[in-house]
Length: 168
Image (cartoon, rainbow, N blue to C red; front, side, top):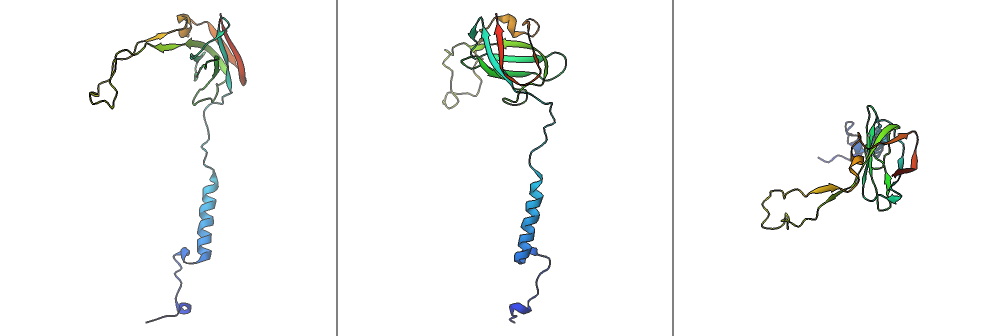
């Protein structure tokens, strides 16, 4: 039996049957999604910190600069580029340093040349066993690799991207 559309009952349960219902549903979802998606950063405040590291007036290339807090706290680290420039990071790349007092260490680790002819993973002769670890050496004066012997200290109070770490 045929019923004309004017005699059909509307389904009050499904709001998507009408344009008004659809617009209402879309606006509800849009408003619900406007709460912001960023999670509050509850970690300690950090300030941008970086500069140039030099040994006897020459830039220190490819070295790891580490800040160890005096007392309790989180440390920071940064790697120097070819000009000795570095940017410190505490939790994520480039996020800076928590203000405070730090002992500084510097290491420049280099791996010995791999002359073992190691087997690559895509080689049929690869057996899944790790190759022997490469021998590494610190190419920086060893006293600076330990927080107890480095003698280097820094106090971070505010943002500073021009800090001069001059080691003599």
